[in-house]
Image (cartoon, rainbow, N blue to C red; front, top):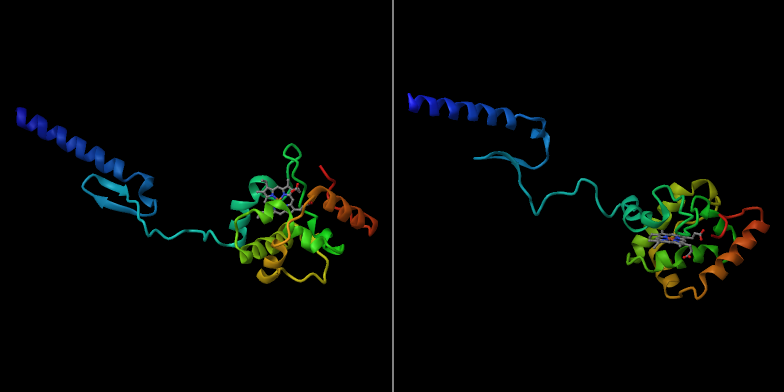
Length: 175
Ligand code: HEC
């Protein structure tokens, strides 16, 4: 009697376990069958689903924290709206400025990555503001520009913004 009762208990537990293992988590990537049922196993060589070096990923990881996913910036953090940043390119010195701002200079990205993410910003977040004759940035140019830091970012920006406004292409207001 006693043995059968235990056997019934084990069978019931087994059925319950089988039911649990069949739950929708069966679709999770990297699962394997173990003695305890389906489990996710950590793999050192697991492939990344989205490459962390795509231009968009660089923007999300290194810029969006301050500039926002859409480039809209933040009034409280004093980050200007970047969605018309291409207007700087119409003014002498504007092309250099877009690379020499501290957030880009100090990003820790390689010259090629800075060129990549800056081109991505201009082509995706600020598309309509980019003048038609604009040439994309290249790594060698970024390397040269990064050797000269801006001493007074605010003053340089104000000067460029003033010139852009005079040409009829006002940039986002200073914060
Ligand atoms: C720590 C916050 C922060 C991060 C991170 C950051 N920025 Fe900025 N960015 C700013 C601020 C603040 C300004 C306004 C100018 C200034 O004071 O530096 C600015 C200005 C700019 C400008 C000029 C826009 C304008 O209207 O003056 C560009 C272009 C720019 N950033 C690009 C980038 C890119 C590309 C990245 C990522 C590689 C990045 N920034 C990362 C805070 C940041």
